[in-house]
Length: 257
View 1 (cartoon, one colour):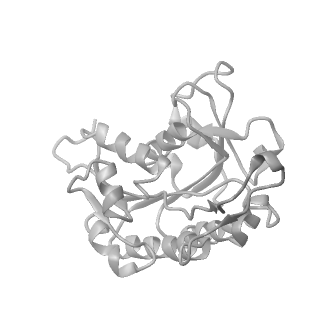
View 2: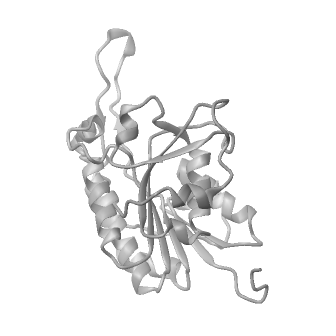
View 3: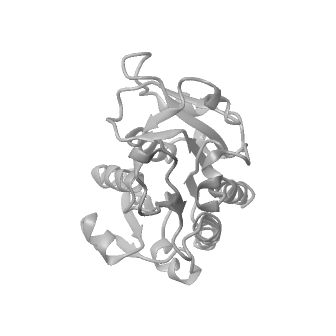
């Protein structure tokens, strides 16, 4: 039995204004009997978009001095910040070819996925955070992965570097590397874990964002999730058995990186 007098764990979700981060933040808020949720976003506009509560902090993750207030007294951190490539205007799909992408100045993967995540890990460690869940991406074992060429950002290279930094930090961690993210219902698919991008060679290499978010929240609750790194995908809806036993799912994982 949980000790009802013990304080609830305070969990900060960074990137809470993003599509997956917002789901994680809302899941924690819905479980107010289990967690005290905090969110971190980049702008006042994002803060208002997710409810504008006092538990939502505005900070620039590229400046570590901005992060301390949000992490003060936090027990766990879920990192969902990521650089986002934008499509260059003027692309006409009717003319064939491929769209070109770019990153805004100062918002390249090196600044967001490496420096920004390193800042979060360092600040969390200094604040005494006891568990960090980091959402990365499948594909990081291949430096020639097509995602790296988008906007010449090498996004998977920098994500991988911050994953390694977390694994070396000494803080208990869980690193999730989901496949292609889908905007579909969660909780209705069988989830699959893998390592070293093996799932990219199969037909099951995508997963709903809602399922990724659920795995983030579940990872906070099981010792089996700590000091683990794994790829994450789902079977198509209607095949297999929807995953409900997350302890067993985490127990399948043996890789530390």
